[in-house]
Length: 296
Length: 235
Picture 1 (tube, rainbow over the protein chains, first blue to last red):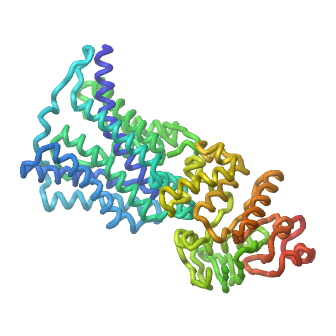
Picture 2: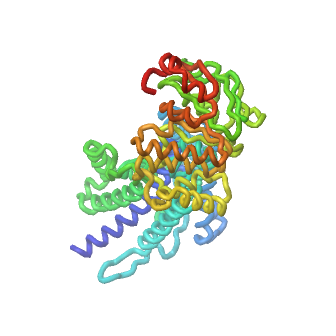
């Protein structure tokens, strides 16, 4: 029983790590633009198709990793330049429409010009390997996901805390006008946030594609929704909250999958949404209640 | 010299400033006083570039800087200590200073922040403390120190003593005196008019978006009629 629980916890943290990476990216862009980016999943979709294309010419997985991350960063910055810069400072509704619009346009582009059906590609050979630690069988991929996520999150934290550009992103997330007054350039800070969000989504894409090995027009949809939910659970704009929200969502989801009867297994996502709706009834600001001084 | 020529500021259908003209000579302290809603903060925000003026011209050292962004104004040597201090509460004291030095190179930025934390001892002692935990007086010192991170030639100050206890207010005026003595040009908006007029060389009185009186601060300080007519008793 205990062994099973530990295994589920590791599975949950592995899944939650991916959500945390996406939630942190969504939190970063929300911080500087006050826009929930529903097109964040498109970074995964575009990266997946690039990965698929490169596997066709025989590129090895280890070579794919930097390409996927670079693609995600470039796509994130490009979407800001092409689409989101035009709605800076616009109403919440305009920003929402723009992010949904980008989501649908990218998705439709792949359906029209590539294929509506998924394209599978080879996953790394070690993906299904397991190791036994004290009677607990752990998938190597779960360990890799947790280690990579922790390293990525610590790196992101170091950028946000130790570099003046990271401090500028945090400053702009708290009070954009004051940041500008201190000399922070809005273009620089918003693009830096999108680049950092792209980096995090790129790492998430690598971890996700290693598991699924498929590119589809809707590949980023569910990860994006989970990322948004995780960011909401932690309290939008609270970056540590986004990480905690991702981990909590992953653990809860794995628990639900393992405990629900098989016949309602497909309702996991629905139940997760209901639980989150209940959370917001009782804690509208998200799970973490922090003082203003502790934000970001 | 910072000069304003018939500067107009508005928000939507509201006209906050109707053609204000004034001069701030270098090395002097100029007071801008008036009741709440007179348009003083709007004028400072227009100078620093937070709100583009609807009309008129702002010149700094002979260059037309009307509508320049806050970043350009900072580079040109003009900084603002905003109303209510607007401290970034999620950043530490030191981080507030470092962000304010973003236009300066890395090493120079850290050196300047260290110098300011030495000069403002209370900030140095609380360098790693989230700035949201600073007291009102400490936060005001941080707001001033932040403005100094760009090594400005002129500092615009919007109600630097607002909301502070009497002792803290005195400390803020002492700080203004030190800055002025060091040769920094100051344009100060403050409701404590008597106190400000004691240290200013020139003063402008604003009411309902217009500059209604101006002259040597010492002379205006003697004009009780002006205080009663435009500022009300007790200012």
